[in-house]
Length: 320
Image 1 (tube, rainbow, N blue to C red):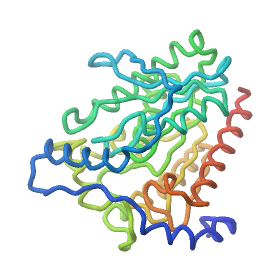
Image 2: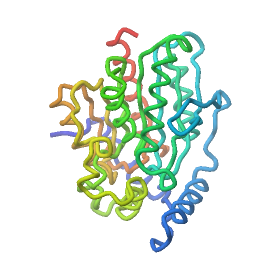
Image 3: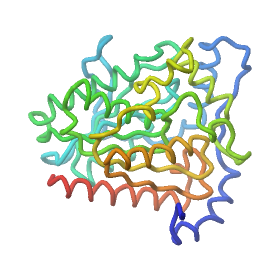
Image 4: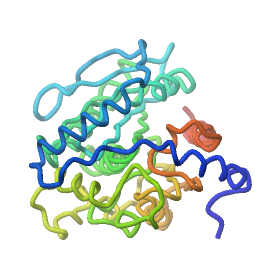
């Protein structure tokens, strides 16, 4: 069984050489209380990403949420929208912001004529489950309700990276089950997501390969997101969507690097989606860690190109 093609095989040496430049999240003293430890991790993350460009095209906005207005960044297409895109940023549910996706979200608006909304959902440990998923569901509901009148479309993509991939799948399931609007979903773009918070094998150790993530940091993030919950409680499909009934979900693209601590979450999810009758495409990128799409490699360029090919295929098949 081949998980990648000859084009990617030829890019492996460059990918391996780039691993030495991989940024690492700060790891404060584990004895600190969760709020202090999360604050220090956030400060370290901000320092690493301080030079990331922000788009002047983004419109700061808010949408109604279950606990008050939810901040977001909106990218409008230049004309009538072919579709809507809800972007959910990563950060282990404890850090990150919509600005992280500005470059990609601006390109989605321009390249595919999508109205793109990136949501600043509430973060743990200050706001544990279900705060973040509730905000994401509210954003999906708002787009589906307002999209046709505001932008010209009521068909929705959802996409996100890492914890944002987790929230993408959870939100897609909520659109299907709670909002009863699964037929309005165009697709799910699941980028190295987190689908079993109790820990797949790669979460517990990925063979010692370099990665932005590590097992202790992953467990800390889960504890912040789901404090005090037992393993059984964490198997709730709204928390670990690998355990969900996946039938009826829209076309899904799963992308992951072979060195990612969250690799197995994607490898487990793909065949489960296929068995449920979902149109699913799995893209595994060799010698690539968590967050590989941010590295200046040929593999990251291929990732972007193949993601866009999938988007166009899905939109054409849906007639939008």
